[in-house]
Structure formats: structure tokens, C-alpha cells
Image (tube, rainbow, N blue to C red):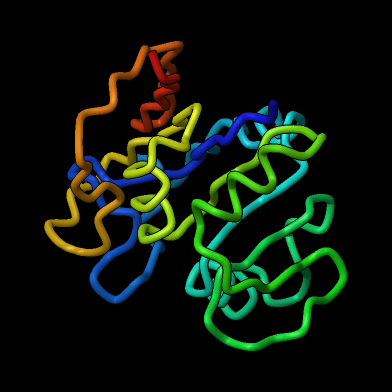
Length: 176
């Protein structure tokens, strides 16, 4: 069965975006130092990416307006908007948990949960995330969009590995 993996960055105090939805603070402590590329190794085991409308919109309007950066992956954008799917990008109104359960039952590589917080929180609440790849950025935002919400019960995790570079700490957990 396919794994569902959360691969995301957050501030030290647990936010994935500032109060205006911006992510321009997502960098290490020294701007003159190039950050490690852990994404390339991660994405080799992934063939599907799931995100919400806000994450999708931010990618296509701000972060990479010239090209779809996930062209090598099958992309699902969860939205209430009625949009036609396009080359490799499927817009769907399905609940995140239902979509993940459906995709998990099909053949393929890992399923990457890219964002946003609402989708992550629903999947965490339903204990549908198998692995957590969290990059902790050396920034305290104080407010913004929180990665984790409340859960009906605790979810026990096992630390698989850690690494750090340029003040960023990467944590990889799996469910126990």
C-alpha cells in the first residue's frame, strides 16, 4: 500500500505561513549559504502530490508562475471551485481523507501532502499520514497559519532521522 507523506517546512513556533499567507521567511539563518537539497531525494519516491487551493494559487501566481513545478507528478488540488482539470493537475471537491484513502488503494509511489494547513489538519485528525518530514526554519513568527490543529487523540510517532544545515533542522518521523 502507498505511503502518505507530509513534507513541509514550519517556523520554530509551528507556522507554515505568516498571517498574510506569505512564505518569504522560508530560508536558513545565513542568506549567503546555499541550503541542502533534500527535496530531490524525497521526491524520487513520490508520484502524487495533494494540495489545497491556496497552496496551488500561491505556486502559480508567486512562487513559480512561469511553469508548473510539479509537472513530473500527478497533482490533486482540493477546492470548492469548479475548474477543469488540465495536464496532470486534477481539481477536486473531495474531502481530503476520502481522496487519500482512494489514492492509497491504487498502485503507485508515495503520496505527498504539500499543504495547506486545513488539509494537513484533517489528515492528521484521521491519522492518515504515515511519515512526517518537517523542516524547522530558524524563525519565530508569533502568528500566522498553524501547521497542526487539535486531534481527537494523540498520535505517537517514532523519530527516524534528523539533520541540520544553515540553522534548519529536518525531522523525519513515522507512525509507531
